[in-house]
Amino acid sequence: MFTESEYFDEQFKDIQFSKEEVVAVHFYDCTFTNCEFSETVFDECKFTGCTFIHCDLNLMKVANSKFSQVYFMQSKLVGVNWTEAEWPRITVPSLLKFEECTLNHSTFIGVALPQSTIMNCSVKDVDFREADLTKANLRGSDFTESVFGETNLSGADLSHASNYQIDPSQNRIRQAKFMLPEALNLLYCMDIVIDED
Image 1 (tube, rainbow, N blue to C red):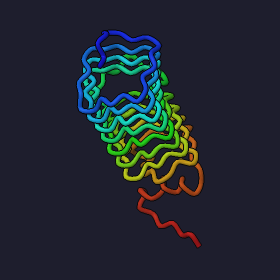
Image 2: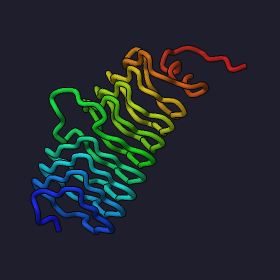
Image 3: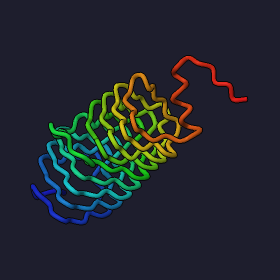
Image 4: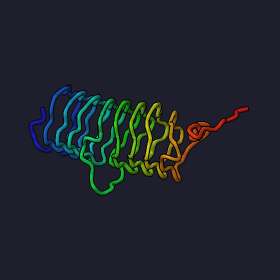
């Protein structure tokens, strides 16, 4: 399928490429629309300025692959271990942007994603321990059963986000934005009684 080592400004539509392997291919400013990449292995690939729209990326592998300014829109990314990707050693803002996506059962442990976007997404049972989400846009997402620990959420926007369980003593939340009533979730880990009368 991908016979070239580099692709620039390509439009890929309706590709069925699940359970395949893509090795050392670099994509620059490419758009993928209605593509099926479930369980596909991207090994040592590079995605720069790319956009995925209505794509199925469930259980894809991202071993040693690089992502920079990549936008996922209305796509499925269930069960992706993002820790396997190769992330920059210096902090780079806005590496990933997810809008209206399904990210359930994924892992971002220790991944630095400052100023990234996870907006209006289903983010259930996702592990964000030790991740850097400084100034991230997390608006409107559902974080049911997701794990935060030693996570940097400084300046992050969780307006209209729901079902998060974030312990303020175990995470950095300075200048983060929350909304009532969901912000009461920040109190439940404090072993106090909240009287709602």
